[in-house]
Image (cartoon, rainbow, N blue to C red; front, side, top):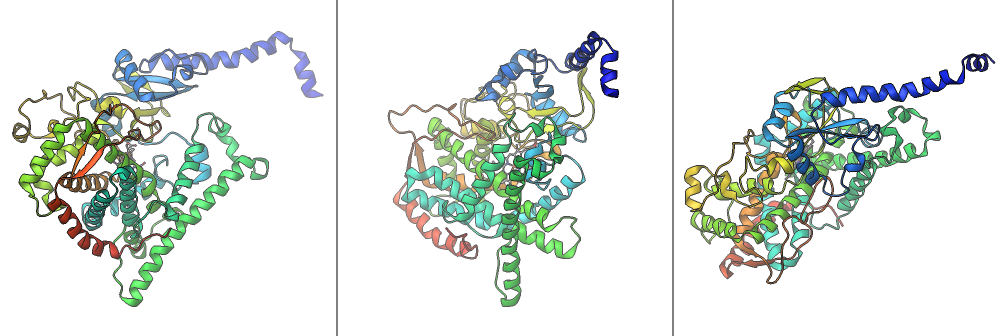
Length: 540
Ligand code: HEM
C-alpha cells in the first residue's frame, strides 16, 4: 500500500526521467573515462567495440589498430576497458617497472572462482594467495632444480629422435608425446609413453571443460558476480561447474598421492625415485609450514601440464615450419653442429655454450610466431595509473600483444623472416651470414623477446621450456634434414585460432642425415632408456 502511494504520488514523467537518468549518468561516466584513456576505435554505448572485434585471429586486427591508434590503445568489451600494448618498451614500463599495479588477472568467476575455487595460480588475482603458490613453483624451478630435470629432458629428446626415425610422418604427435612426458616427469616423476595414456585423456577433458567456461557471454555471473552466491539448488549451472571442479581436485590429489607412495616406498625399500617438482614440494612441506590445504597444494604440480605441454609442443611445430620455409637456417645449424659436435655423438646440454647459432634459433622460434599470441592470460591493474598523460583506471584488463611486439619492425627489421642470426653477438653473426639484416632497436628484456610474458606474472616455466626446446632441436637438427615436400606451398601465417596458436597441420620430409647418424641415435637410445626406466609410465 505504502509502495503504491509512493508510486502514484509522483507523476509518470518523474519516474520516466529517473529511469532515463541511470543509463544517461552511466553513459556520461563511461564517456568521461573513455576520453581520458589511450585512444582506440570508437566504442558504442554499453556494447563498446564488440561489433568491431574480429571472430578470428584478433591479434592481427589489434596489430592493425596499433598502426592507427598507436602502440598503446584501448578497446571496450561492453563497459570494460582493455588496454592493448604493441611496443616492448611500453610493456616493460607498465607490466614490469610498475608491476605492483599491473600484476593481477581479470576476474574469471566461473573458471577461477567456482570451478577452481581460487586454487589455480594462472588466473589468481595478485595478492598473498597467489604469491604463496608462485613462490612454491619458483622453489621447484630454481637453476639448481632445473639441472635435476636435464637428464630426463635429454633422454626424452633421444627417444623422440628414434621415434622420428621410425614414423617421421607422425612428427606432430611425437612432439606432443615428448612435451607431455617431460611435463609429467618433471611434475610427478612418471613418464608418458603414449598419448593414449588415461592421464592424458583426463587432463584434456579438464582443459576443454575449463576453456568452455571462458566463453564471453556464456555465464551471466561474469557480469553480475553476486550470482555466484545463489544457492546451488537454485542454480544448476553452478552445481554443475562445482561438480567438475571437485572431479579435477580429486584427480590432482590422486597424483600427489602417487608421489607420496613413491616416497614412502623409497624410504622402506631404499628405492631410487626420480626428482620431481611434486617430490621437492612434498619434502619442503615436511620441513616447513605451507599454508595450503591438500587440495590447493595439489593444483601446483597439476598446473604444469596445462601451462607447459601444449605451449612447448606448438613452439616445436613452429620450428619445423620455420625450417621448412627457411632452408638456409637448417644449413647454418648443420654447419655449426658438424663443426662443434661432429658425427659420432649427439649434442647435450654441456654443448649449449658452444652452440650460439642453435641458442639463437631457439629464441628466434619463440619470437617469430609467439605461441601465447596475446601474451597468455591477460594482466589486470589494481590501482589507477597515468601513462604519457593517459588515464588507466584500476580494474583495466591489460594485454601485451606478443604478436605485434615480437613482429614490431622497429625492433626486428624484416620481422617475418625467420632469421636466428638477429640474436647473435656481432662477431658470431659475421660467421654465419654474409648478408645481414640491419639491427633494430634493442628489446628491453634479457631474452630479447616477450614470448614468456612480463614482470611478476612472467612464465615461471620459461627456463624449463627453453631447455626442452634447446635439447629437442639440437638433437633433431643434428640428426635430420627437415625439408619441404615438392610441389607443396607453405603458408607461414596458417595458424590455429585460440589462446595458444600452432601451425595448421602440414606435411614435410624428415630424413636422417646418414647411416652413421642413424646408428648413433640407436646406440644412444640404450642410455636414454636406462635414465627413463626409473620414471615408470602412466598406464593406457
Ligand atoms: C614455450 C613454452 C611456454 C610459453 C611460450 C609460455 C608462455 C607463458 C606466458 C606468456 C604466460 C603469461 C605471462 C604473463 O601473464 O605475463 C605464462 C604463464 C605461466 N606459465 Fe608458461 N609458457 C611456456 C611453458 C611453460 C612451462 C613448461 C610451464 C611449467 C612450469 C609453464 C607454467 C606457467 C604458469 C604456472 C604460468 C602462470 C603464472 C602466473 O600467473 O603467475 N609455462 N606462460
